[in-house]
Length: 118
Image (cartoon, rainbow, N blue to C red; front, side):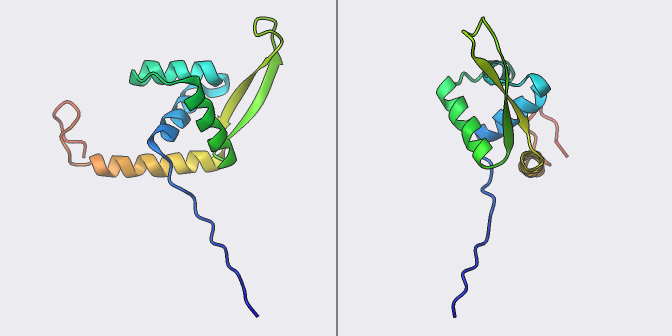
């Protein structure tokens, strides 16, 4: 008799995935595609394409890191609804874990303003 054991591991969050999740957290209930892109650009100076953002949003949904919901259709959008995003508890937990690791790496380094981050 043979048994197959599957061990589920969570793949680490990539840098861009973290940026997207952080932007969604900053925007709260108003997080949808255009606003997420604008928030990322405003905070990081980084311009991203819609395709890169929506591919990442779909991947994060598949990983159960966030959940999307449709808003009300609007005439301005030709009857289409905006899709709003919210972090799941899993997404929040993974983001905290990733950011905690970065903070540990920064501890003791003199990178920001010449002061030690520890």
